[in-house]
Length: 411
Image (cartoon, rainbow, N blue to C red; front, side):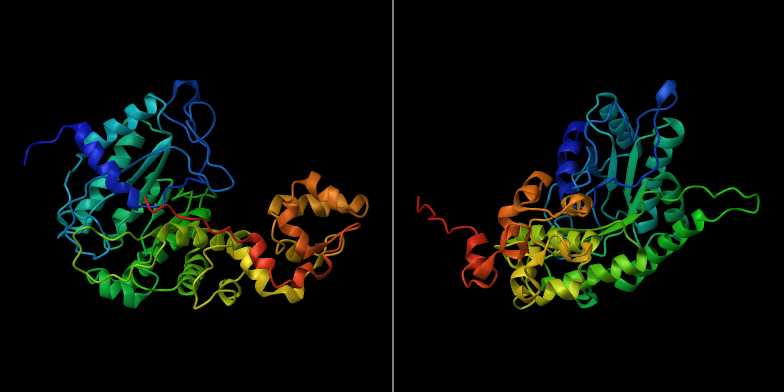
């Protein structure tokens, strides 16, 4: 095989990294290189993009250290039996790319994952070396996210957490049975144990030492995980329940969902459920409802058919349509929890409603000025000057919101 140059490796390994969805950087500590000390920043000027409250990701150099892998997970494009083009960065090459991309203002940080080469320990050791050289040799102050390897020695993951802003471990599939079937070399219980150790170590870092000082920061932006959607036949209700357990057990910052696409040369009979990207989007919306709107996974699942989220309307609207008995909601009297259930009301608009109604009863026009999506909300609310009448219980209410069918071209 002809030797690749750095640009060719980057083309291969940045493309291979697109299957890793866990690449957001909220919650890290504030660091910068003001005054000429160090390199990079997690804030302020010089950052290409910012991490926004609605979940958009800042600009990171997102690569695999290598797409060689000793494992043969049926859903993975980089599995050992796959015929994809292979490449491998050296430690020095990743460090060089990160620092040079930052100097050119292309990125604000590094997201680094890898296939497993030689052994989990060998691979994790190289990833730790990359983070250490960036931090200690180049004094890199930017964001680092390391995709850690659950089977690696705990001391290596410990070192990773002291150097990186965020750690993540892929739970991969939402059920243990699915993991045994499609990734038999991985162990769900071992992944959970490793995630638990990271959680406990992060909690320990908050405690004060005998001298009264806090310990060294450990993964200050927390840990996250990824669930592959559509590879094992698990329905959306099962996926959301799995996410709930992960959030609760390990206080994760995020669970990321990655839509499964068939591997071109796969011989495994994977039960692909289409359309994968729309389904992924609906799961993110449902996850958002659980994290910020007070919904339980079981509530969202109760509005599904066969445990699958509605692909034509969002989960919040689907829940409202399935629970019309609790509507319409009086905007001037309802509590925060119920206002958050109204389609078209976001967390910001609800906060504005609660503040504005202290000065008098709100009307339909007031909601428009507040920024609520009143066209979506009006079948589910009453105001000083608006009542939906029979609209709330109309048989065709769902059809009002569902996208209109399109005539597809035959050419």
